[in-house]
Length: 140
Image 1 (tube, rainbow, N blue to C red):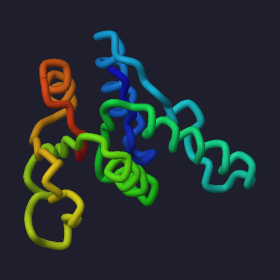
Image 2: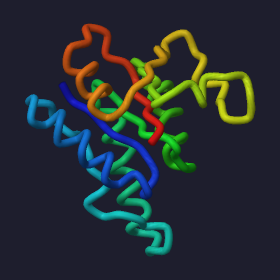
Image 3: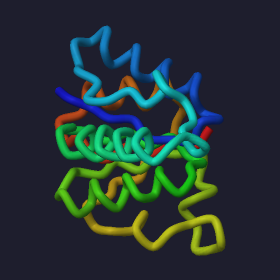
Image 4: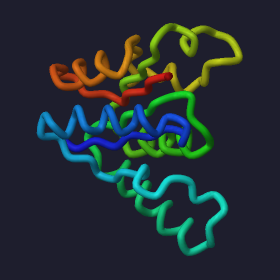
């Protein structure tokens, strides 16, 4: 199984922990943006390279994992995953993002999105046993 993890830079450690859990189980990480960190203040060429790497990472993955809260890029990756027809598994430690208030996003409610509550170990465990791999969003 191939996976991609999207999140904000502040969730760096959680991204790496989940990635390691999945790789130990034989899964393949399609692109690990944590190897370069923030590129917001780099040059145009590096921004383009990172954008293409992240785009291809999402496109090539079977499972997209998003650790929220995320930033602009996180939601761009969510949009790409939906547009590519990827399965979506939406996850958070509690129901904070699954209420009809200012914390949610309309796209979290698409029919192909399954909502899941739990921590990194719960998410990793669920992915490794699930027959219905969907987009995983996890809020730390």
